[in-house]
Image (cartoon, rainbow, N blue to C red; front, side):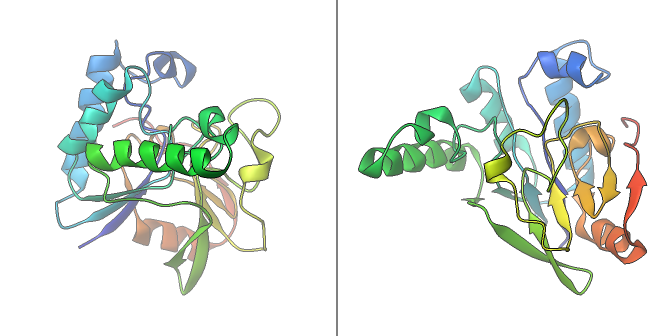
Length: 210
């Protein structure tokens, strides 16, 4: 039983192929390869934390891939997930309407195959301590100025496991990017992250796609 982390699959998202220079001719090939790499790595006894931006495009079609992925899957939503509390359809609502929209959106992801949808802040035990777990890093972005700053975890001097930045880095200081674009398309074992924490802050570039 192994715990893994991943992020930013962007299943169904055509433009991400160009944005991140993914080695695919189109969405069908990308979706199939992401599922293949996942299932080569993860077993049904394992747990995978997905740190946001799981599926775009025709959402029902894209989310259908979740049921084909091995393991117990937990979602910490990102800015492209409909169940994220910062989604405009949720943020603009108030009171009972907002609660109902959140519940409805979460149910859609649970029905697709996630065991839980976890609101931030979340922490996970790693390397003898706990790290923040978030779609967003403390600071930095995939392009331009930092976005969604009000939804980012507080930098308390510890570590953060995150996504969002795609190919910008694999590790930057105390920030560990588990996005597929930084790890050759595969989920990352928690032990690998613990080893990086033990090694201390450093800068690491993304790995090539498998």
